[in-house]
Length: 74
Image (tube, rainbow, N blue to C red):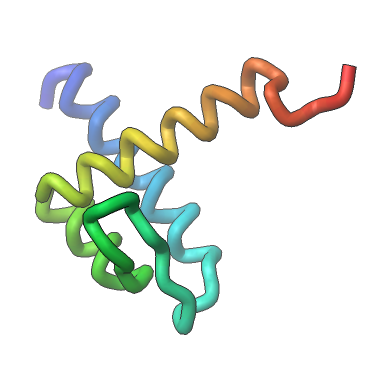
């Protein structure tokens, strides 16, 4: 497996792990795409669908914002 594929798999695992911390009875709204259950989003990520890719993009953006200190008072 190439390094890029390993990184993509690790990112998927991180996003899935974060989704698993959410209550199973809650849904997540992804803009005009609609509302999705936690399980539906996990499946979408695992299958590499457009919704799964969007969820990865959103989560990675959020995590990078935290890293850059966007949510801390200065």
